[in-house]
Each structure stands twice: as structure tokens, then as C-alpha cells.
Length: 428
Image (cartoon, rainbow, N blue to C red; front, side):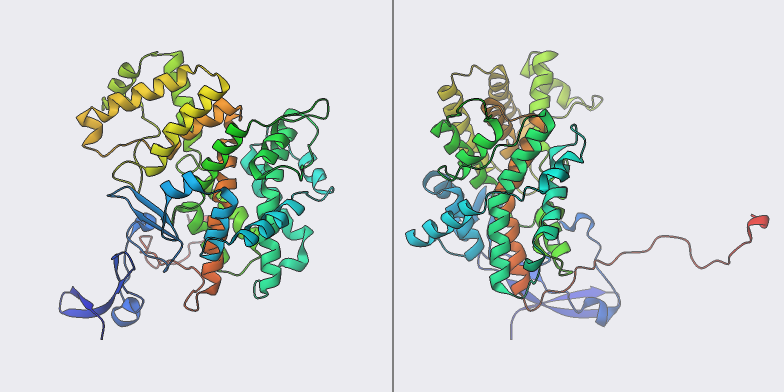
């Protein structure tokens, strides 16, 4: 018999099994708690609740560790490609060369979107946020591919996955082109995944557009670093919506909407806005940090600290070097980067921030890279979504393969009025 723990409430005691993960994480199995005691747990934000068993991603926030399927993020960012990492997340293992070639070919063949989808874009305001546009268009894929909605048919599921992976960059670039009134650029099957996206973003029918391979590689690395991050808000949203068995496209649309929030994927946009505000107003990292430490000031230091990491975010360390590489390649002299570097230097030598474990996170440098490449600020989170897509799908697949998975239905502790009688409107 496995290990157990005992929950004691007054005279009532209840033994619960312990579940130990492959990295030593331990959980109390409380599935029978309410049935046997009538009690539930109270955990706002689910910060101490394990909603599933997962083999996709491991994070140790205290040590600053991130691994996809056991592989350290540092190795994948240096040696792998985004589509190879996508296959790792989706299938559990790194692909053979022939498997990767086949997968890449299938992705390339399905990058175009149906011409009728352009009418959907035209029906939306030009100033609509690209995340809202992407969520709407991804949700609409269910109407264009009704034959791929059977979640029990692996052939149809795989076809739906391929189309999502292939079309999201096209959908995202279309959202940008719609917002600036330029014609959509068709995918180019001669280009790799990131180069194709950059051409669709910045190319025009008027002249050739040449993709800088250093920029394309930097973008590929960014997508790898964003590809999965365990049970975050958007991934949990994909799982929660998926638990009611809708088509894959509906679950991913929900994930995009969850990612949109400034407390999640929108944080890299807020980092750039913070740096621009410093450049425009204080002009000094020191003055800004002093304001951030002042309890009577509402100034917030964005891009530092993380819900999980209580050490350096390993992704931020990789992006710091990538930011320098991109800026040097493009010949960009960035006042924002200078401010960012000074912020990091001062914050990491200030006990106020160090004692609170406020280290730079992935959002701190990603926004600088996107801005140097020329990505509009409102598209930053869209790039995050493209990167996170294989992770969302991997968790969606894992959930559907789990025989113990149930429709998500959290409990609550009711704090409203007790029973009372209806009063006629004339007597109120």
C-alpha cells in the first residue's frame, strides 16, 4: 500500500493517498474528500491545486529549471528548432529526421487559409486588437472544417492539429495586415516557419522582401521559449474548455483569449510601455526604481518576478544574449535596451528586489527583441500565442487520453444570503 497522509478536522480524521511525481513532487489525493467528509478545499487561483497528472513540462521555480519532456530549455533553445520542439511536445519524443521532414512538409502545405475567411477580417474594425481577431478566426476554423470535429478519431485530430500549427502564423499576419489596410500576403512554401511569418507580416506585393536569417532564428528561439509552461492560465483554460469535449479549435480560441490578459501574455507589451515611459519621463532607471520602491507611489516594475520562478527565469537568461545578437545584427542602437540593462543591473543589486525574489522574467527581454524586429506592440502577445500553440495542443491531447479526466467543475464556498421569502414589488 502506498503512503498516506491524515487530514484532521475536530474529531473527524481522513486518510488520503500521496501521489509522487517523477521529479519528487508530492500531492495529496483529495478526490474522495467531499464524499467522505462533506468538506472541500479553498484555494483561490488554484495555486496549490494539482488539477491533472502531466508528462509534458517540468518547472522547479526555486532552482530556475524548465524542461520540455525532460529536455532542458537551454539545450533546446541552442540546438533545436521550433517545429522540432513542437513535435517533442506533441508526441513525447524528439523526432527522427524523416519524421521532422514529413511534419514540416505537412505544415508547409496547409499554411493557406480559406479565401472566404478574408470576409471575416473585413467585418471587423481596423483597430480591433489582434488577439481578439486571432481568437475569432481560430474559433471560426470549426465552421470551415466541420469534418475534423470528432475528438475520438485520431486521424481527424491529427489533421486538425496540422492545420492549426500551419495556419496560426497566417491568421496572425492577416490580423496585422487588416489593421494597417495592406493586402494579405500569401504564404511562401519555399520558406521556413518563421521566415514565412516574417514575410507575411512585412512583405508587400510591390517589391521583394528578404528575410534576415539572424532575425528568423531569433524569432524561432522566442517561439521555443514560449512553447509551454506547465499549468498556466491559458493552458488551464484550454484544458478546462476541452474537458467539455468541444472541437480543438474552440479550446485553442479560449487559450488565446486567456493569454491576452496583461497578467499573462500581455506582460511583454507592458514592459515596452514601461521602458518607453522611463525614456519619456524619468530618463533614469535609478529614479524609476526609487519610485517603484515607494509604497505611496503606484509605479510598478514590469518584467520582474514570476508566479512560479523564485529565481532567475531561465528563458530570460537566454533572451538577454539573443537581444544583443539581434540588435547588433540590425545595427539598432536602442535606448530602451540601455534602460533595460540598467534596470536589471540596479534591481539585482538592490536588496529590496532581491529579497522579494524579483528577477527578470521572459517578458523583460522578449518585448525588446520584438520591437527591434519591427513587430508592432499590439502583436507581441500574438507571437506568444504562436509559440504557445504546441504546448496547448499537447495538454489538450494529454487530457483526452487520460481515462481519469472529468469535465472541469470547481466547487465554491457560498457566502451569500441564506434562505428568504420573496417580497412583492409593491411592498419593497
